[in-house]
Image 1 (cartoon, rainbow, N blue to C red):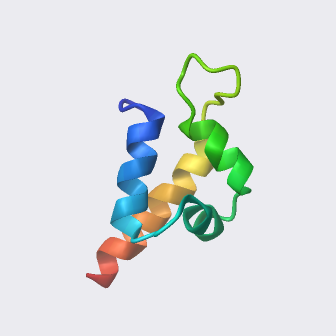
Image 2: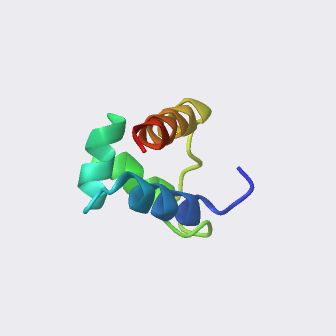
Image 3: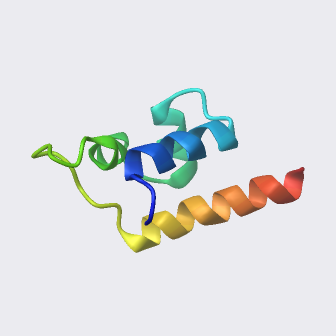
Length: 69
């Protein structure tokens, strides 16, 4: 991922129209706590790199949203 995860996730949240992080987590089928670890600062002990399959889920959600117009 070329942009910072936190920035990517914020842009994804906005693009999908999610009002809360929990709503975005629900859309993606991921636990809210897992999504929180992906948004942590990279130097944080709680930071986790988002797995590629999770990135694919967000890419698919964004592609579906784009098709909807």
